[in-house]
Image 1 (cartoon, rainbow, N blue to C red):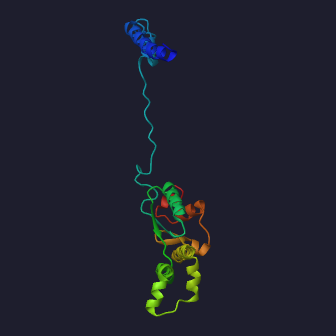
Image 2: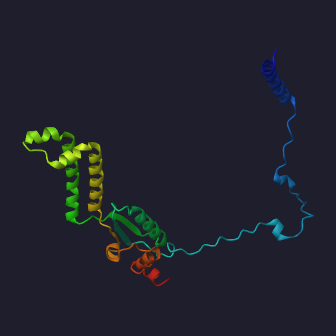
Image 3: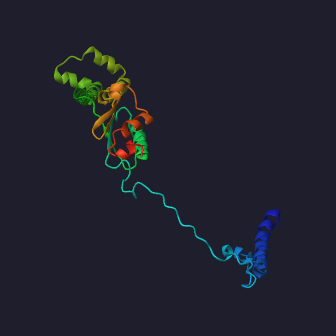
Length: 229
């Protein structure tokens, strides 16, 4: 028998005898539990100390809260509207401001909404996909379209036809960029209880968190917070 066969035969035999040995060996002594270490004194030998015979339970201190005093959270009854440009990827800024206001003014209602672009830009943005699709169809099937219409293919058609796939990709990318630009308003407008307190369209910048917190605190309907109570 070579070493491999000896190992394959000897290993199961070793495991079998090891199990038999563990089966008949006595179990290890159990560890004493912590309460076994306490020494109980007889009643006659215990010291006359009230701290060792009775457990003094200190009363829990309850601090007054706004809800217990009947005031309620400082933001209850107030609404902040944040109208932002979704096409400009301002949603992350709006969510950050929402979380900050809800933490600073518990109970306040923060509403996020899209601030649309002006109507002429929105109408023009609807035309862009139609022009995109028309140019792509013209490039791919212009040889059949122009003869049926009785029109001589223009020079720009042959220039775009020379690099068909590059032209279609360029039209698609440029059209998407133009459509996103026409749908964007660049707005980040903050209203508190219907009053405009910050406008990115006017300030040409985003509001700071401390600045916005102070603007909201001056206009919330809870006078206790405004007075610093």
